[in-house]
Figure 1 (cartoon, rainbow over the protein chains, first blue to last red):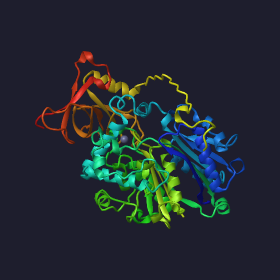
Figure 2 (cartoon, each protein chain N blue to C red; figure 1 turned 180 degrees about the horizontal axis):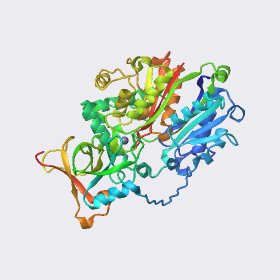
Figure 3 (tube, rainbow over the protein chains, first blue to last red; figure 1 turned 30 degrees about the vertical axis):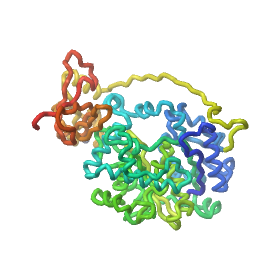
Figure 4 (cartoon, each protein chain N blue to C red; figure 1 turned 60 degrees about the vertical axis):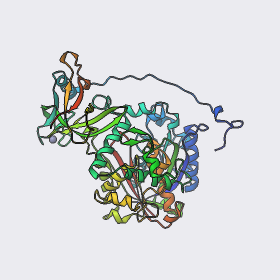
Length: 380
Length: 149
Ligand SMILES: [Zn+2]
């Protein structure tokens, strides 16, 4: 079976507000960049187009009807995956791996600034009888956060250190609108939203579109000098019942990474990667995810943060892009946004300290109230 | 991308606002019906798998482990423990877990008059008077800390 590579990436938006552009124009701009990057013409060279989006965020249902033209996919094979962008990438990977086609375009976007009922859309995703009456996204997160910190015996300063680190990492990333130098005191004194969750822990909403072009090995070697190989993929879901989950663990990240490690032959994840992009929502999620990925343990995760092991210049940089904390929450696009960041870094177009990086992992989580997510292993 | 000619101010950026009222009803189903009837009688019901014996709350027609019918509904004593809690606007929401049960209930916990809420505190369900119950989770008014436990 052929190997699968990412041969082009493109993006657009990545801003709190994009009033001058429709979501279709944002997709057009991002895909135009990705096609230029890959050196392809979408009207003649692409076998299949995949968009990742969720009708409720779009404000329009059956959204797959509204996506072909602006991707160069008019009257072609187009479908929508109603999930995080990383799941779309994995679907594209499988289409090529199976020999169905040799070039696939995967797109995902957010136009959150157009969503006037963001809280209600999130609330609609809660189970209506047992969970919706008492939960909001913030309450559900605060419940898990408190339990995780209780079990790991973490003080408030640990998630605050993660937030400060990722805000700072973002300053080196021209695509990260929410980057900043933020002191721990500023995080710890930011308004309490739902104790123990503070405003500064919560990724801010952003608009943006990410596009990747995937190709078979044969095509990739013809088209580009620097293919980024997809070596392993995995996806996984924990129980849908918030009340039945183990709040100390990200079971979905553990399951999806195990699947990806097996495929890629990764036996010691703690030593394998030059950098990692994980979902870093609310600070503590970065830690919970790193444990689930097997790169840290519940015994050494606290120390890793305290001594700066996961800093940009530490032994294992985590979220060198600035993460969701700096890039913003782009809902279904979050995973694909981070793939674009990882690809650019592996090509030497990311942070200077990571030039020469060869192995990367990207992990995503679909956000509250879900317990599902994916992992992708990349290599140059 | 360049802006259209003349558009140099975001206040000129056109958008279109629409709002659709959407309403749903959700069928409680076999297990939901049993749970709701239980609440009306002042009981918390879980489902027990005939194969692995695990008891689940919320109850379900099927066991997620074995993929077989849950044969039995069991009454769960209304005494639980705070697994975690979140506080906002002077109100505390907690996940209450019960001994020997997978899952639990998310509900309001009444703050103690003295001392603070803590993970691990034992709580009990306070039901509304029978004539006020409707078969939904508000039939439990709140959970309260059990003294001296
Ligand atoms: Zn069973």
